Image (cartoon, rainbow, N blue to C red; front, side, top):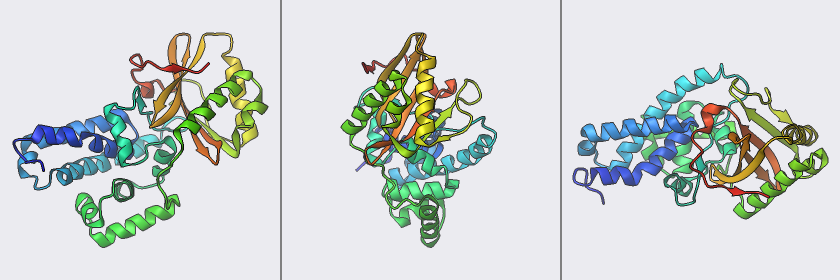
Length: 300
């Protein structure tokens, strides 16, 4: 067991992936999550490590409450966001990267994060801490500053709002990769029917340009409409340097699209019953981050 003083930096380093995981799931923006974790580190250094009886509980409490406060402000900003808002993709180069450890504590798929958007800040915190990070009601109550009874009511309300008895979106990684490859091939064919054959009947396409680059201004729904949209986009860019690379996006295979030598979009898909149920495309430059370090695998 960690001692509060002698091993304080090591304790924080050990817990950092979990702290980042909570903050990222709460906020959906990597930079904001990193800011929260940095603030927790400063508080940990400035007396927190000495006063904490249980280091993990102390640090998770700080991160949770900071995230709740940050999210309240972010939700107001998102009301004025141009077009659909999508979480910032969490892009990883390798399975042993530090953030990859998040998966041991729960799902980070885009579909899961969007599901959380239906919850108020405190509802989201209670839901995540109990359902994803497996803290018991007593621990959650202390972390969010409520009674156990109140937390039970909050969790019940959150479950009703998201209609999610199983919050983890478990998908076979190999199936995901195989279907992603077929999706790229179908898109490149320029034939909407080939794309549509891979889609669920009620499939959706959501693009996030943040008002800075062109994309769909509303979510597109229905296999026929989505198939025509995807094929049309690929035809539009067929005359230029247009490359799709496989990367890890929010824990599962996704696509990094390069156009004219520059990163243009990050695409992730959500699969249900062997078909693509949702396509998420982030083009907002603010959410693409620095991608030059990646050594992606090219889909031929």
